[in-house]
Length: 148
Image (tube, rainbow, N blue to C red; front, top):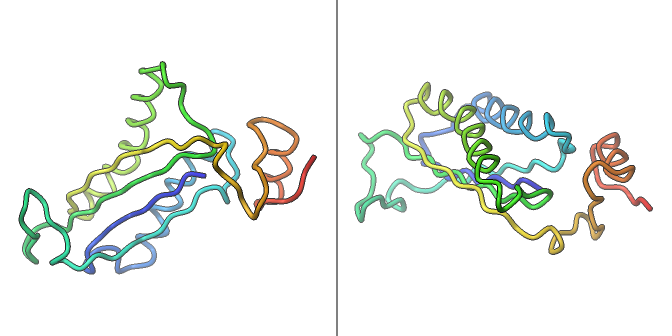
């Protein structure tokens, strides 16, 4: 699954429509590559202003809100030796995030980590391999279901 953790101060993402727009944009990246929409999980995690340190100092209320985004890719990883594919993917996510962050006046940073999919289960099920009948079943149901 792509799991996105979005750490933000209390002054950011106060409007649900702003969250919804970001989540829909992120989800569309994955569904465009054929992943089930339900694979994409996003948590907005509010962090008190005095609990965020950058360069050894806390942010003040007059600083732009700092948003830290972390994604864990588990369902499918990029080929480890394909530098271009990895950089292009980073650019794709940046292209989706940058205008939204800029529009809201946020300072921001993101990274994507990749996890071995053999360590992943959904509702106790081993997720189907890419482009299989099992994956098509999951996409159609938009949830994990038993498959053979």
